[in-house]
Length: 174
Image (tube, rainbow, N blue to C red; front, top):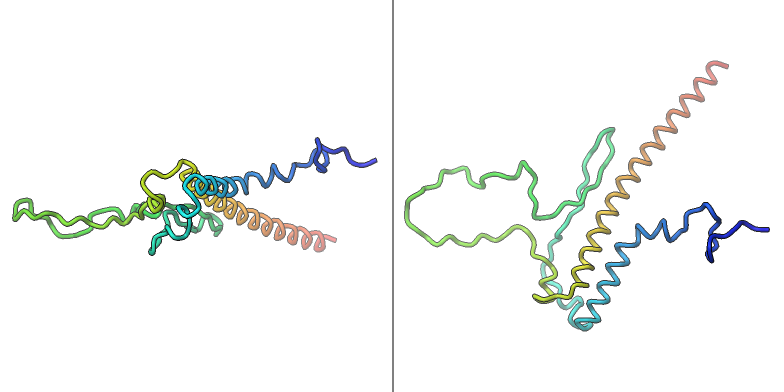
């Protein structure tokens, strides 16, 4: 006979279903695209598209690679407007005068990037916000997967090295 099948699928019992495995990886990305399609349907195809993009775009989140123990690279998603602890502090080393001529302070340009959802108007549909959150979740998941892949590769190389040492010891003892 054949192997028993799980439900209507052709996956043998005991094996994880491919959708269950890939669902976590493709889930945020797929949900993001579906939410984006819903927003295009709600606002109109010409209201959500490349024509609304800003002429100068800056990322809201960045992928940062850092060295962890044993020389492994670890990937982390960092918001662009967040400063590292060593960057926080006074911007000027000079003292300020408490009393003096009162001038209207010039507004400083904020270093944090603006929310790209504002490109599409003030009141954007919830599905557009869901799309943005889904893509952020997907980026976080991709960083976690890349970090885990580095750990797996490191573990495999350690295992190969130990297996080679074991072979050498067995050959030396024989």
